[in-house]
Amino acid sequence: MLVIVIEVVLASGSMAKRSSRREKARRPRARPAFPIEHALAKLRELTRTLRVPVVTLAAQVSEDPWEVLAACILSLRTKDSTTAEAARRLFARARTPEATLGLPESELATLIYPVGFYRTKARVLHGLARAIRDEHQGRVPDDLDALLELKGVGRKTANLVLTQAFGKPGICVDTHVHRITNRWGYVRTRSPDETEQALRKKLPARWWIQINQILVAFGQGVCGPISPRCSECPIEASCEKIGVKHQR
Image 1 (cartoon, rainbow, N blue to C red):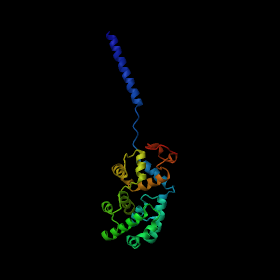
Image 2 (image 1 turned 135 degrees about the horizontal axis):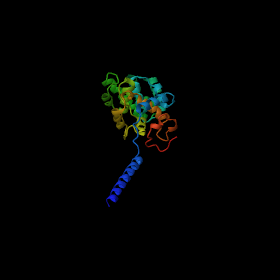
Image 3 (image 1 turned 90 degrees about the vertical axis):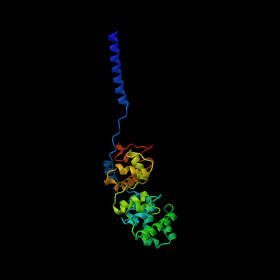
């Protein structure tokens, strides 16, 4: 009887070990952390070869703080190619807050048409130019909080002005940065503002200024919102492809 009990116990132990090994084999392996620095370095090289609207827009805008601010206002809910042409026409007539105030609002609206909400944006530009002239001695402020106090300026615009015009640390998160970093699985957020805060906690500082231009160009040329060109992506193997239903 004792021999039988011992054999049953040993058999049960052996079965338990085999079951445990099978469960471990079935358990999905934890995916390694997304290689953010490697990815951004590879994409920086790629985007230098792309001919996408954001490159055309950048060619129309200098590093002057007012031009960066005005172009960003024009770009909201507008294609970059349309924004680039509107910025070219606007800056041919007015490149400063004072010169912008010298144009009637109706003429300003005509110059920037057909950007989205062009009449509203003409009014916003006039208001910004007036506030900068009257409250900031004609200079665009180089402080995040001061920029956010300007009517019509949100976090995306404020961060873009800080990074592109003043070279100060900031992370400009637009729809491309929000979509792509979530698609990678690098962050898991529900809005661009949440993405900015998540990136501030984990993105190496040396990429803060660069990430927007890299991912906007990448998003326009390869990693679009629908049916991204994964076959052309140099970092496809590292991407979790969260939310991707169709790819090319």
